[in-house]
Length: 249
Image 1: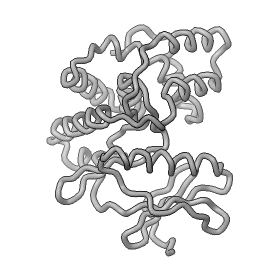
Image 2: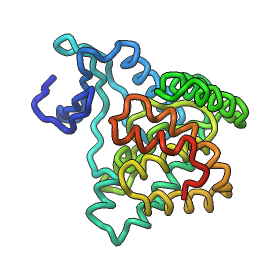
Image 3: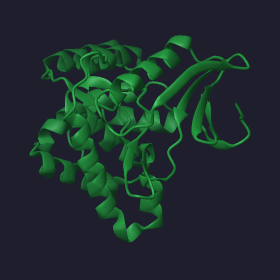
Image 4: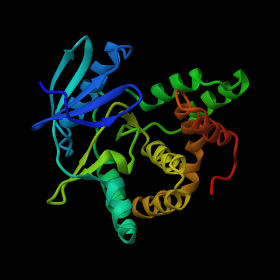
């Protein structure tokens, strides 16, 4: 297995290409359970029939855990949006249609979205009163069982040369309320500094899915709090500023 062609470097992992395989090598401090959970999530999503790269192997390389996937050749949707700004709305519509396709799937063995969010809210630096209020609001939100990606961002979509979209990075996948997943994507656009893109995305999603924006907004303080964990200082500040905000447009 060759590790001489780096595709991407992240905070806690490095991704390599070896011919028709993609190898995600995690840092030594990354937990074994976290790696195995990501591989398990991914394999469960494979069974839904969505277009995603297949898991080929979970192994150790020089004392570090690694997941081996099939390599998918193409460009990310984020790259295409940057290279073709005149087609951004067209790509955004493709992006929304793909997320709607994800939300039509169910996967009963995935972890529950509410359980994951509750755990994350408990880890935040927010005061006890705010955490209590958020937990109470989370319990009151409707329970659904739709597949939620948890990090649905244009950078996690690869479009092949024949136009087929593949969805990557299912480490945060859960089953739950699709509007929470939408709130997450909306916030990811904002964290990337694309305020206009965030608004266009939300408008388009709500129109296509016949979802009230006010309903998505109810999820934003909860999702913002849960996303704030393990973020850098600037991102954490942005997210925590939205926890008590009443207007998000």
